[in-house]
Image 1 (tube, rainbow, N blue to C red):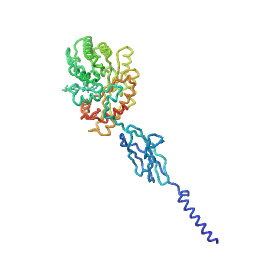
Image 2: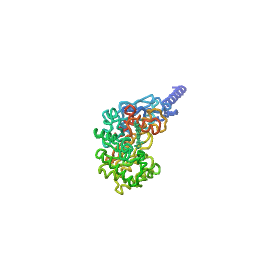
Image 3: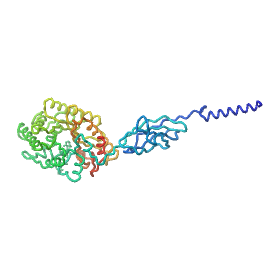
Amino acid sequence: MNNSRLRYLSILLGVLIFATSCSSGGGSEPEIELGAPIANQAANVTSSSFKASWSRVYRADSYLLDVSEDSGFASSLTGYNEKSLIALNEEITNLESKKVYYYRLRAVNGTVVSSYSNTVEVTTTFVPDPNLSLKKAADTFLVGVSVQSGKLNGQYDEIYRREFSSITAEWEMKMNVMHPSAGTYDFGPADAIVKYGEDNGINVHGHSLIWHNSTPDWVKNFAGTDQEFEDMIEDYITTVVTRYKGKVTSWDVVNEGLEDGSGNLRNTIYRQKMGDDYIAKCYQFVRAADADVLIFYNDYNMITDQTKQDAVFTMVDDFIARGIPIDGVGFQMHISHDYPAKADIQKATDRIVERDLLVHFSELDVRANPNKDLTSLSPERSLSQKAKVKEVVQVFNGIPNGNKYALTVWGLKDSETWLLDFYGHVDWPLLFDGNYNKKDAYYGFLEGLQ
Ligand code: G3I
């Protein structure tokens, strides 16, 4: 073969090698770089599905999606092991309720595959058994609701008997109703409520013997001596507690006796007439009338007002040290969908448990509209309220069974909450809507028990 032919062949070979090296990527042209996608938090989470989604990656022409029940992706859900997708999202279906799932993905371009995205954890929601009820689900404590004697029938009766194991008179077992004037008692409404509890095997919590906001005028204007005042209070407490002995399990003997902010003893007529130790005296009057009834101290803002909370436990510790009868502490729990934090509820509740006293979340309602930014309950705010109810129930359910008295909601349906008058604007703080329908918050209560 002559030289020119050899030269032609060697050039041809060099061109072929160069072309091959370029096309194989082994040569000077760099392999493309593919960034890892960013996996977003799951959306549209239901009891059996959720929507996975992720960011677009420059130069990616598809994605590989992994879905697993374990965070290490040792195994994958059928069909979700490197499932190739072009879209930036995927509806994952046929899942189990109340189960944790994980997903991640990689970007692809030809034979180039990116590193993994972040891993997203998602828990499908809980599907309650339609035959379940609050009281059936809460098998280690009483589930209470505040009631009024004129609404113990119809759908009230049906829901009370199905869902609740305790009732509290919203106002009809207070002094201004039961003892409207010196020497006269009106036990009509109280008797009706207590009888309803007895007839239906529902616990009755007494609320409340002494409260500055339900003091009858004749007591505020009492003209006798301090001792005569104290004798009158002892007589009132003895009369009421004796009447309901064995029927009313527990009493908020003194409600809201300490001031907001300072935690000082409120300067009520009871303190003025009976002295600074009036609360202890009232507890002793109750114990003398009924050796078994449970004696509670009940107050509000007990999670958020640290000074008042500290003052309550200083008082409780003093009672314990002096042998003054006290069985439990009631946190009213008039809270909001976004406040207080679960950790703060836990911390305050632990202080009751540390003293081995009974815990009563005694008046739970969860404002969905504390900042008046809504005119109707939005789906998002309803879910926020549900989450807070779930947190409250989780805290309560997590304490030792021996310290669980009751978790009582302050009203049955949104349209009848005291908050509407108190704050003067629309809100939806309870577990049932104005038409007696269960709300997300109701299911939050059940989920808190799982
Ligand atoms: O329904 C009757 C109506 O028929 C009557 O004409 C009218 C006139 O007096 O009274 C109406 O009843 C009122 C009832 O609320 C229903 O609106 C009572 O007077 C009124 O005293 C009662 O207020 C109650 C308030 O305590 C005072 O007792 C609220 O319902 C009740 O939610 C509220 O609950 C308190 C707790 O006991 C202690 N913690 C704070 C909580 C909220 O203030």
